[in-house]
Amino acid sequence: MDCSSPRRRTIHVAKVGLQTLRRGEHWGTLGASRTMSAPMLIRVLLVISEPKLRARLRKHLQRSHLLVTPVAGEEVLRRLTSESYDLALLDRLPAGVDSLSALVERVGRLPDRPELVVVGARDDVERRAELLAAGSIAVLERALTEEALDAALSTLIERRRRLRLERLAAAGPQRFEDPRNLVAESPGMRRVVTTAERVAMTSSPVLLLGETGVGKERVAQLIHNTGPWARGPFVAVNCAAIPSELFESELFGHERGSFTGATRARRGRFELADQGTLFLDEVGEVPLHLQAKLLRVLQQRMIEPVGSERSVVVNVRVIAATNRNLRKEAEAGRFRSDLYYRLGVVEIEIPPLRERPEDIEPLIDSFTEVLGRQFGGIAPPIDPEVLTALKRYSWPGNVRELVNVLERAMLLCGDAGIGLGELPATVAACSNAPLILQNAHTNSVGEDEFCLPDQWLDRPWKQVREQLLAAGERAYLVGLLTRCGGRIGLTAKTMGIAPRSLFEKMRKHGLRKEDFRS
Image (cartoon, rainbow, N blue to C red; front, top):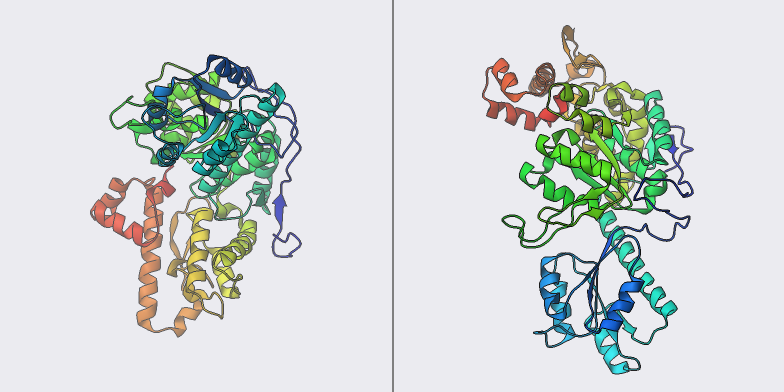
């Protein structure tokens, strides 16, 4: 992003050097190298039949952030198919398997296949070639010196960690540029960035507050990428999208057979985020009966998967976000007050887009540039009337709505660029004077604030009528949903229509009830 452009100026938060910080009882030194990945939790299955070799390997695997499980050869298939491992070290084929190729094929069908490492005999060139060709990641000689063995195991573990980080990064949001480039022209967003910089170097929990669509996850990624946690994974969880009966398993993992349908052990999000950041979006949706367990994990830094008797030590930086007023939720008994105080050690409130108009034009520049690259071209020219409309619109959906409007416009526009015709009617109506002027803070609709744009006088009545109806209906819905706090039943009753009809109208105008909750 060109920060020298007169129309666009972003706050770039540079990566800082890592340093050793005290993180509590289970926290260790991160180190200063940025070429090595963070010591995230790695599970190792040790299937070595020879006692001396098994003891030797266990000695070299006695390091932090490794969970080593030694098993007998006849158990290896059951373990691999029912549990989750990163590395499997074995010295011979398990019973019932004819060749290593057959074992590799079976392991390759697993959802999170482990890396197979074979400890073989020395100078057996043909056997080594066969093992590597079959898919074994490495073949270790039994006669390796202690130093060479330790170096080889360290390299294998580090490779697996990098692979885990790459998979997590690929599964994350890839739509826009590095979140360390954050538009912050307005005073409110400058305060957000300044506070984020200060808390990034700490391990304290952070609670991000703000309406839906203001960019809470991007601020969370900014905090993660700026400090020493950047070497670890960034794992985001949408708490509102998890069924209550699966919430505990999703966060803390489960063992095979712990509940109906648990045919295989599964790692929870806390374990996946070890030595990194766990972002709990919509944390106000966490079921009340599970909030005590979440609080205990935050305090003790230990998780206990569902159905397991073994606790797993994790070190995770937690950032939570919500569009609710958790203090009022706690006072009403719908959210635990002790969990609220634990999550809200540092609170950062992100202002809605309507309260930071200075950011609208830089955001337009940024998103059209990125979308242009994604569509295989460059950002199209934008008509000045379009910019005026985008600046005057109240954006009840905040930045997320702005992105959707720009994406729609770029898909519909021709070579001439983006004009008013590519904008939704309610947005285009704001190009000259807003059809219905809205209060910037409450979205309340005034009774005497109706104004017709001058250019509409040159259009046919049929076209104006359609735009009037669409703009008026949307403004009416926005005002009424805001007054009713997004409650569908009350809104539909006030309108005199069925809730299903209200949902259809909201879907037509791109409105969601979550955007209007108090």
